[in-house]
Length: 258
Image 1 (cartoon, helix red, strand yellow):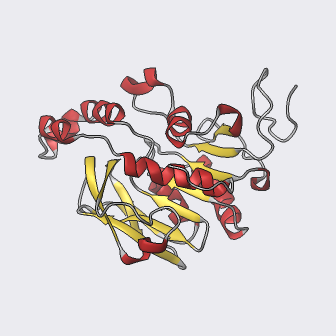
Image 2: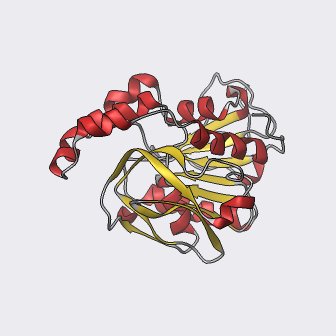
């Protein structure tokens, strides 16, 4: 039976949890990594959330967005697109995110989602003046992270997987800077109390990261990087994944257990 709240879901589809998490799918993995399925699956697995408690909507493919009040929280995926391209689907999603954030929805933007959330709330996104950031990178937390619900108590610094060309150049008003990296001064922020953007990919395993490095090896070489050296430095990033798990628990009002 189709749930009338989610008309874009295919039939047959199991009835979702009464208050599931919404994944806004803004793109697909690089072609060589699609054998591992898509970002919604990677996010659900990394977050430790049962399939029945998540709903994915592919806005890049033209799917409409449901009422945000139907969901416990919202996660926005990464994408191969650029926020500065101002694609129709992206701008519509930005307007939806702006309304949801101002209504107090719990939001977690990843990479493109981080940038799109900043853009939606009045920040500035553009080409990273420091160039491409790729591989397992140390994320340094700033003082505001000490009492942040997602970052408090993590090691300083902690490892995270990153791959991006654009960055948040100016945070939205009312945002707090939480973390930085050597190549990205705004690597994580919180807007007011319940909206977060992270440039890193907490859903990426080491396998995912290595696959991305191999897919971008020619671009890396052109830009002066040694792809083999980048590959050798890839390692697990469990504390970055913990940030995502904390968000999933916070959105559903469940205490952290690990």
